[in-house]
Image (cartoon, rainbow, N blue to C red; front, side, top):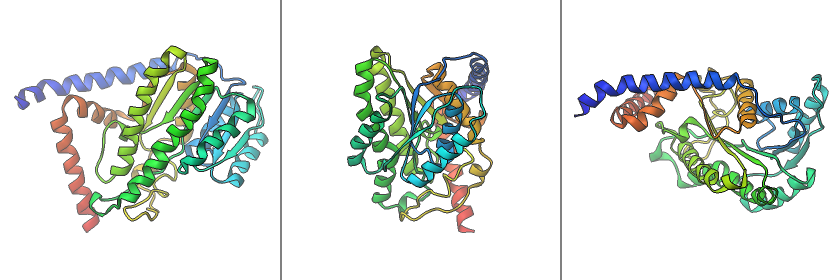
Length: 310
């Protein structure tokens, strides 16, 4: 039975991926709504994708509230943005709010500070996050909790703190930067993949529940991006991984991903996968041909373990 399914399933999967890629190209050709003067909140804005999103939305004329743990680094981003305002679009000096998403008990107060900046939030971009590399057998449960606090509980705490003001105005847009690993899991990424699967589920539920208020919810799932995410990843004992993975080093340019985030906001997209043909194919395989997907992941795990043992 599996052999029969396999013979006819693979062409269907490949054709579906091709149609999806063509659809993405066509969608990108359409113009979208302006974000001029919109209040855009970005977490994790001091580096990586968050910093690139700050640049892109600043050039587009948004009123930014940049959030992160380090006030000095956030202020450096503000200075950089204001010093390079060479666009014809009217730009605004960004505001900053400093807090740690992992400390969820302080997120409510941070949300109050965010609302004080401009009195409202038009777009919330939940970008801040932490990655993980490790073997499940050697990973302490506290590491799983730490990753979940930053990647899942922090973003939903901030979202739920700002959501009532959006519901009251019947206006707003919630964006979360997830990952392709929120749609399919790969070995030695358990804590990270689990946090992104939880993120995908929560924001899918939120999208349905706030649709009648006119509040769009966008989940963006990139593949590997050229940032310091792997360098700052935690390992099984909680220490830093400290390695720039080859997959990360050869990943997408964060500037391109930031442009895609702006595009998704302008078009009020619901679910966006920013990955090449192979990761996209893997997502389809996980749903349409799971037996093959599981074999491929087992093979990948054995190869990675062998490489570590050598």
